[in-house]
Image 1 (tube, rainbow, N blue to C red):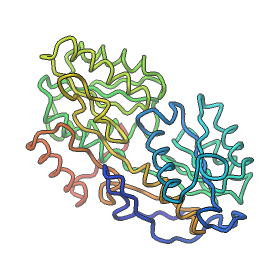
Image 2: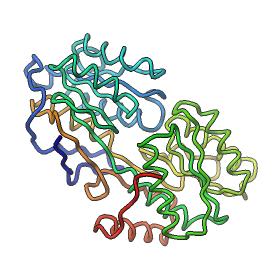
Image 3: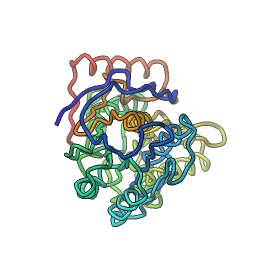
Length: 347
């Protein structure tokens, strides 16, 4: 399977979409003309829904942007999403998208990969994309992100900001992808100060905000003042608990680091904002560009697209970082880009 890095793939935070370089291979026989009016795209969500304020929402925003760009409407003749409320919905939703004759079907999240691999084999004339995993197949393009690099920067920011020298990490479900977030975050913290303690907890779900709130409450009560959450909708519970603490006692300053998209909005409370920063990944832009390539009969089937700091595929938002902290983040970022720091991918 071929791999490539895409320079300047996205302008993070600005919502600017650039078109991927032309690439060969893949399922070009979609049975339609390849024009905007003749190509349809559907995405199948992971659990959490398109309003999870995180991963799924970024993908849906990308698909809506693609539809708007080409004057298409939501529905079977343009673009749509199929929501998965549990893992058991993946195969059903993928097959439903194929039966509805969508030309390109996007699987959002690594958990969908096994189901997508099976459905893609059975439907060789349909284009498939998997976000956050790798699936082999001439009609499948795989998209992975170097989340550990952005998470490293989050660790630097947290270590430079903490007043208690106690930090927390809340993950959704344990696995290779969220493991990259954990590994990068801890590496960034330890690069600044090896003596800072990092507490790690997993909720076992990406769709349990109540569990996220519970884990956050225990962490903040233990003296942790910054939590980095990589947990989808579960992470909304972390924000909820942090805001409750600030409402009860504004002098007890706590922070949350967002994930996948700029989550500044989620950190707003009366009197301020508790989103320290957010790790960003170009899910939105990847969805737009893959849809455009498929529409132009240039679908990059059989390829793995890798997005890291060097390719502007991941980053850390400015958020509420002080100038000194931002300078430190920029310095470490350049070292990673220059190859002077190799960020671990596994905890």
